[in-house]
Length: 113
Image 1 (spheres, helix red, strand yellow):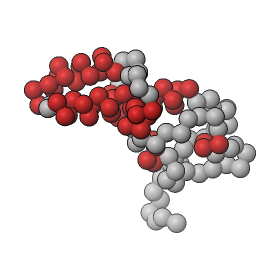
Image 2 (spheres, one colour):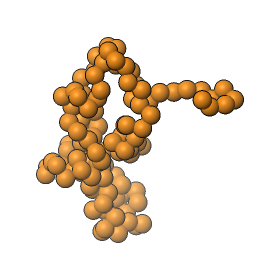
Image 3 (cartoon, rainbow, N blue to C red):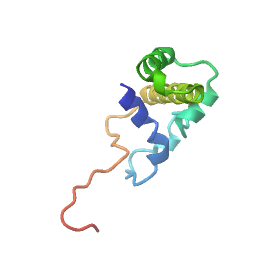
């Protein structure tokens, strides 16, 4: 679960890189979804922590607490809250049946275009 949330933190940084758009579907930015730039930005927008933030922080502190400083814990708190908020925003985004992936997969065939 944490790996998924961490991976979602990179969505804002990589969403525009190499995205293939179809003329029949509007770009993601024009939909009614909130604009997401980074997990920390999402955490700053919402003053309250999303549900599950404290549970994940408790787990991280129990598992890695002897290696973490107070600064590390506060950074983790922002990142975890931002990642959960990003995941919730992605979950709230309505997709049509014809919407494609944001990233295009093209297998390597010996040479690139």
